[in-house]
Image (cartoon, rainbow, N blue to C red; front, side, top):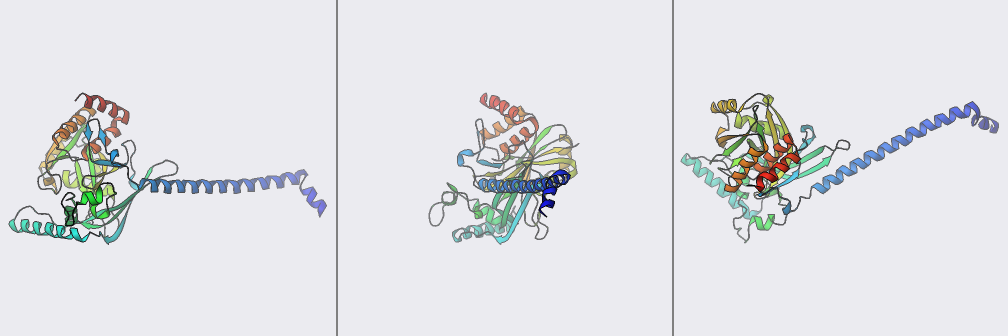
Length: 368
């Protein structure tokens, strides 16, 4: 037996056995190395996700030259598209818990809307909405693509309107802003809105801006993006299934501008929060395939389901200078939705590149 073993370890048999052992060892080593790499990538994604749950400090609000906004960008800078397949929305089917001292405010909102309805005046109905429970952001292991998980809870429109009164004195003293917002990550009961916002560019390179009507719930009369839509429980969820953010934006574009999904290319560029009113949102850019500015205005004149939400549309050449000048003028007069500079900036960066936009913005805004 000893002689057989010695003969097997040398000569032709030794070569064959050694080669076979080498192949097996190589496969086992590579498999172990792959598992280590995969585990490291998973831990890195989890770590990034945990880190990104902590929002930046107040000093990190979006600025561009003299432009100052109340918007904090959570993810995205305009250079990378957030893929539709990498966004997940998780719904907790449990209503937002509102402090007892704020419940009378909700009753006041309901009573006021009923009075307006009885008088035949414009009134809001208590549509089912979502509140933002949290936002987790990770990265795919190879391409470093953003992977988004938005967690939401059940809320309603009257709760949203009541909790927009951040500076109203509370019965026990102080305000919602002072007690829950300043120096804190605001609680879920104040995050009763998630909106999709789009900068739409016509086939003849005109960027669409919309002036909000006097009848909308927040920021009436201010200039905003081409289309904006809030996440709705009854319109954006099929039964108990989770909503989809790209579908939300397509619904808003259809309802406000009468554009069908196959008439444009839609891409998400960022997530943000308007810290002034605790409104969360996402920024999209949409490029119309063949519809020109003139054709869009003519089509909208023939009706759109939510045409009333914008009292005026303004077309601005989609170039860095004209777009920034429009925003700067609106900023000086206080006529801008805070998210508008962010949405427009993302669209410009996506088309012209960050360096070109930053360079042109520095020169243009410095010279007034």
